[in-house]
Image (cartoon, rainbow, N blue to C red; front, side, top):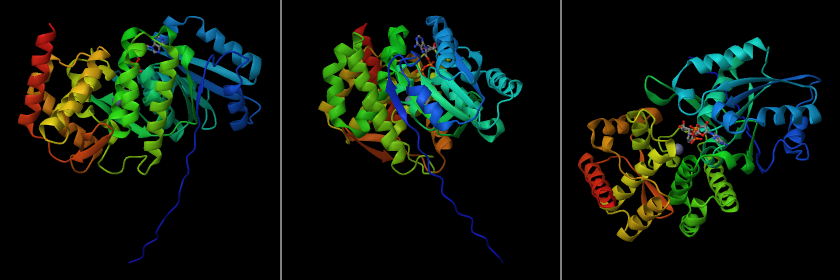
Length: 380
Ligand SMILES: NC(=O)c1ccc[n+]([C@@H]2O[C@H](COP(=O)([O-])OP(=O)(O)OC[C@H]3O[C@@H](n4cnc5c(N)ncnc54)[C@H](O)[C@@H]3O)[C@@H](O)[C@H]2O)c1
Ligand SMILES: [Zn+2]
């Protein structure tokens, strides 16, 4: 028998910029970056735009066109608008629309796709870019709290398929990410708060000081203090990036700490037909796993209360009637299948310290849900 052992390494590097007024010609961040990575005399760029953002900021398309006209006149811009929110990932017609646009405008692998919008549109845009011609370079411009602090800065993209979250997708790091805090001013209060769930998540598993910071800044964050949100996004994105770089960026193992609280969240999003936002579902999912950590004897009672208090202070509702349905527990199986290998769920040993378990007691989960129901009854 003969064996040829193939081996090579690929190094990834991408900058995540934190800036403001990204498309003001006085701000050269994007132009400088593109001039560094591109030397073509003529470049093709497809902008995949979030319709919700486009409606909220009607001048944005012209501002963007003017920016390129002033600083990068050799770019040919094309636009495709994608419906807001989870619809972008649920309906395969939008994937096709982007692919058709890529084809129609003759984009090649050295062209560029820029996704601009919330996490859903970015997940779709990144996926389309990753599969067209086996990978067109893509840049992300996230415009929600959640996409700036979490989904937009990582290496994953994807769409929902067969009724399952992120069933189709790839690990495809972006060429760069540009987080512009000023783009958030039109975000609804609901989505402003919703994105904070991911910051609480990463604080709980990685950074007790950050959790404390969130406790002390909950009020100003609720009141839409831009400077506090800027700090939150930077710190949360940094924790996500550090984790991704720390050993298993393409998740070949079975453990996925950044998905703390997500096994039930993903299921609940589907069960509610996406009437809950991702962040709202994650808040509920974390509440379940925090209570579970307490009941399993891993996490002290005081910490359990602190965490639930913070979630409530940020106006997350921690109960949903569909939690009572058996279907929720299918989330455990689907989570395992998505990761591959042994069921691995992150729980908490302390605030700032996660730890994996490989079994979840269904009866105990139901007790956690009963606790959440009772607390929500008290609030009514
Ligand atoms: N790829 C990853 O690693 C990863 C990680 C976490 C979450 N996600 C995914 O991210 C998605 C959720 O993202 P999201 O929370 O950003 O929600 P979203 O993409 O659904 O956007 C929320 C809403 O805000 C609107 N919007 C976006 N920017 C706006 C702005 N500046 N002003 C006004 N409205 C604006 C959108 O049109 C939409 O209606 C989910 O599909 C989730 O699965 C992916
Ligand atoms: Zn998430």
